[in-house]
Amino acid sequence: MIPFFRKIRKKLADDNKPIKYLRYAIGEIVLVVIGILIALQINNWNQNRIENETLWGYLNNISVNIKNDLKQASDLNFVLDRLANNTQTIWDTRSKPEFTLTDFRLTEDHLNTLFNLEVFEPNTSGFETLKSTGYMGKLQGTDMETLLFSYYDLAQQIKDWRENDKEFLDDIQKENNKIDWGFSYEYLYYKLYKDTTLFKDVKDKYQKMLYAPTYDAAIINHSYNYFLSSKLELNFIGKSIMSLIENHQLQASAQTMRSIALYNTDFSDVGKEEVVINGIVPKSIGVFTDSNKGFDQLKFEGNEDYIEFTIKPNLQWAAGMFIVDSLGQNVRPSKDFRDFKKISVELKGNKGGEKLQFALKDKDDPDDGTESRVDITLSKNWQTYNFDLRKTFPTANLKNLHMLAGFVAQDIRGMTFYVRNIRFLKE
Image (cartoon, rainbow, N blue to C red; front, top):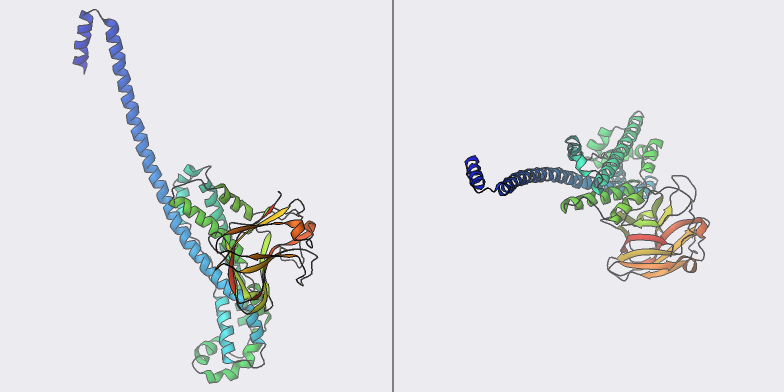
C-alpha cells in the first residue's frame, strides 16, 4: 500500500497536482474508517444476536417451567374442587343412623384426600437463572418484565398459602392422634379392608370420631375452593407469558395488562367498571353457586380466558353469582354503581339455545327470586348483551349493589355456559 501511495504521490507531484493527491489521500482515510466502522457494526450485530438468542433461551426455559406450574395448579384445583363439592355429602353421611361400609369408605376417601393434599412447588429455576446472569436488565421497562414478576410473586403467595394449610392439617392430625378412639389406623387400613366383617366392631367408634372438632375444622376449612381465584389469575398470567415467548414478543396487549391490574382492584365502596375481564375476577368480588339441592350442583372453573359454569340435571333452579366479597364476614357488603348506565355481558352456550335469566340485587333484596330479571337465550358463539341498569333492573338499588351479576336457570336438564366479560358502562 505504501509503495503504491508513493508512486501516486510522485506522479501527482511531477504533474504539480498536490490538491488532487490530498483529496485522494483523504478519500483513502475515509474508506479505511468506514471499513473499521462496518467491522465494528458487524461485530456488535453478531454480539447482539448471540445475546438475543441467549435471552430467548432463558425465556424458553421459563415457559417450560410455567407450563409445568400450571399443570400442578390445575391438578391441585381439581382436588380442592372435589373436596368442596363433597362436603355436604360428608355431613349427611356421617349422621346416617345406618352407617354402612360404603359410607365408611366414602368418608375415609375424603379424609385421606384432605390430609394428603400436596403443597404447591413452582419451578423458579429459569427465572432465577435469568436474574443471576444479568439478562433481566434486557427486559427492563417491558411488559414481559412486569408479567414475570407478577407471576412469580403470585406463585410464591400460593406456595406460602399451601404450606400454611399443610401445617394446619398436620397439627389437626397430631391432635387427633392423641385421642384414643378405640381403634388404630393400622386396624382400619390393613385389617378392615381385608376383612369387612370387622366393620361392625368399629362403626360406632368411627362415627364418633367423624364428629370430632378437629375434623370439623379441617372439613369446614375446605368446604369452599378458595384457591380457584388465584388459580385463574396464575393461569392467565402464565399463559400470557408463554404466548409472548412463543411469538418472540416482549410487549403484551393493553387488554392483557389491564386484566392483570384488575385482579388487585381495591375494596373501596365505589364500584369499578369490570366484574370479569377475560375470565379474571378481581379479589374484591366472590363467585358463588346455589341451587334447590345445594351449592355443589353447579360447578364453575376457569379456562383460557373465560369462566365455565356446569349445571347438573334435574334441578328446579340453579344460580351462579358474582357478589361483592365480604372478606369472610357475615355481612352483605355493597358498592355504589350510580355513576353507571348500562351493564355489558359476554356469554356463550356449549350447544347454543340455552336459556338463562340475568339479574342484579342490592344488599336489601330478599333471597326469594323477586329481584328483576331479564331472559337470555345463548348462542354457540360469543355474544355480547347490553342492558340498561335502571330500566331493566328497577328492584336493584344501584347505590347499594351486592350481587353484581347473577345467572339463574330454571327447570333444567343440565347445561354448560361460559362467561368471558362483565362490565359496567357509563355510556
